[in-house]
Length: 98
Image (cartoon, rainbow, N blue to C red; front, side):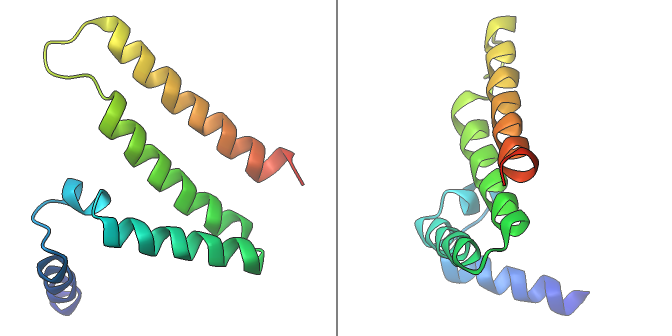
């Protein structure tokens, strides 16, 4: 377990990242995720590509729509609605559309 921790710490040091929130918006990390997503689409790995799409989409929504401290209820409802919309899109792509 310690070896895995050292690996991720060295990876974060290499990318210049201090927090997990910074890792999600690091251009190198986003580029790698997009490349893996496209590779999964080409190979036909539907559920793995939807997982990557869901993680990146959720991080993007969290970054832009998460309510700030002391915000009102409408911002929270809007955040939940956008997350629900992403969930519906992922369910549609994963289970309804063939």
